[in-house]
Length: 245
Image (cartoon, rainbow, N blue to C red):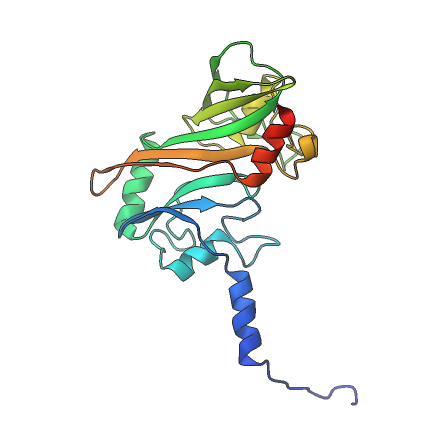
């Protein structure tokens, strides 16, 4: 073979199919009808394609499942979870459902509850954290209370279980800012266990933050039916909780 020569080859059809299958994760569906579905997202799955994650995202899986309502590129997704946060996410299957769900989110009619294991003990059994959040002044990869672009952020928490060095909290979002729970809890000296950005990575053998979207409840925007879905702790978080006990 000499410099400048062109080489052509065929990729076996089976290899193309296998690569496509590997790039499209299987969806775990907690609720589904003709208008929307509630996905139980595993940790490690990125919601939208981006730098370093061109394929194998939740958006890819939604296309394969036929749920692609809403604006181009958003594929029916009206709220999101961080890559390493597991749990429930509602997705529209039509443009109308997408618009109605967006209205529901803006009206704060989407009840989002998380389970978070934090290091330390809360001073009270319940609390409300109200502190604006935005991009950190010194580190653009972090969200912070020390920011030039503050946006309203409100988080509620209740003590679920008190442990020797940790506490299991049930956290409810009133707003939905990026990293809101992790930033707010760290701000009151209750960092989420295993959080490599706002806490201490590797805590309790965790390979990610102990944060799970455990409950999603709302009035169906088209049928009026009450949708109330729960998700149990995945095995890695359940094991960490046992170690904390």
